Each structure stands twice: as structure tokens, then as C-alpha cells.
Image 1 (tube, rainbow, N blue to C red):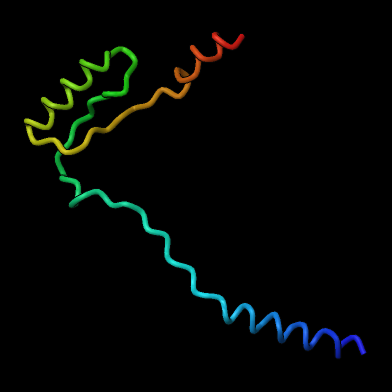
Image 2: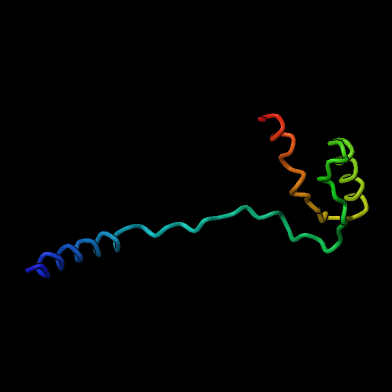
Length: 87
């Protein structure tokens, strides 16, 4: 008796699932072209630089042909100012 109730329910559920439209693949924006092989260890994100100085360094590196910069991020440094403000 229980199987007689479950079989139609499973059949209906199967038809619903089959009838759903396929999910579209998630697209992620890709940067134009491939990154070059030439880059620098510039540490642009360091807190010892102003935004203007970092922008100038990036422009100079691009003029030399660098297409990327390797950054070393000091995770212990991030959030210290915000923690002091909220305390």
C-alpha cells in the first residue's frame, strides 16, 4: 500500500525535474588577453606608500613592460585601525 503511494509521487517528481530548463553555466569575466611573463615584485599594496606613489610606480612598471606585480600582503596589518576605532 505504501509503495502504491510513493511510486506515483516519485514519477511526478521525476517529470518535474526532467521538465526544468537546464541551468546556464556561470560566466566569469576574463581579463583581455593572457598576462605577460614579465612582472615585478613591487609590493604596491604596502601601507608605507601613498595612493599617488603607488599609481606612479604602476605607471613606471607598465612603461618598462611589466604586466603584473607580485604582492606580499601582511595580514596582521589589516584591520588594526578599524579595531582601534570600534574599541
